[in-house]
Amino acid sequence: MSPEASEFLCGDWVWDPGLRELRHYERRKKGWAEAPDAAERLNPVRSVTWHRWSQAPMQSSTGQPIGSRQSRIVAAYEGGGDLTIDEADRECAEKLARAIAGAYGLEIAQEGAPTGRRGGNLPKRDDMGRLGTAVGKTQVVLDEVGGEIIVSEKRMLGKKHRSIRTSEIRWVELEYTVRGPIERFAVQAAAGVEGEKLPLAVYEGYEGWADPLEWREFTNELARSLGVESRLDTS
Image (cartoon, rainbow, N blue to C red; front, side, top):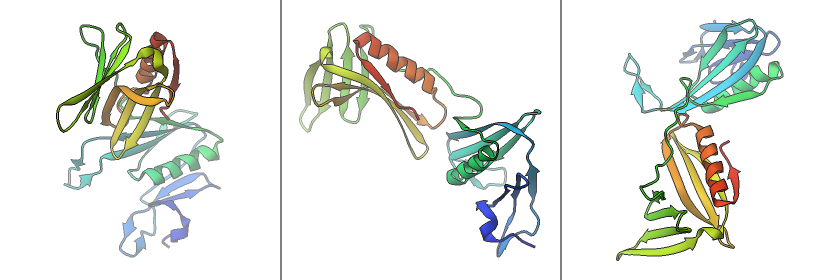
């Protein structure tokens, strides 16, 4: 007999907390198949990792489109071996991860691409040691030797330039955001009494591939160099 809709944790997955068993059912026109096409009764689990990453849109070998946003749950057994679940629906993936982790009193470790994150995405300084970045119509150049931040804004007629002393920087912060398949790391200086945000370094790319640790270290080092506090947000 096919399971009832109320029995599904999410998507096509049924979680049996009593048996600690996960079952996947093939969807049919009028509900689901009577028997699961995959079932796993979990052994004692030592860790649960939720990988989230994005990639360029692709097609499967059968020509079916593969979404750009990917999710994978890895439950590592105490006795060795893993249970790996690929689930493109992020909300469903989170429910599965929480159900498994909760059954064993574990926290969920969140990671990026399963093949590992990649460094080398930090900005390069020019020959004069200046750090420059452009966001939209605004270009910002940090000149630590000259003790100033030069802001250039494109206007209808020419550009508007202004200079802010580095002594006016109150803190440096790292912001992390994800919009669709794209993640963004932005190192910003808060300057002046009102804490105006000035972008000092920005990276955008597919989610889950850049190394957050690299950006944290970069932000901390830059803050130390400027003699101010660093604030980190890469959750």
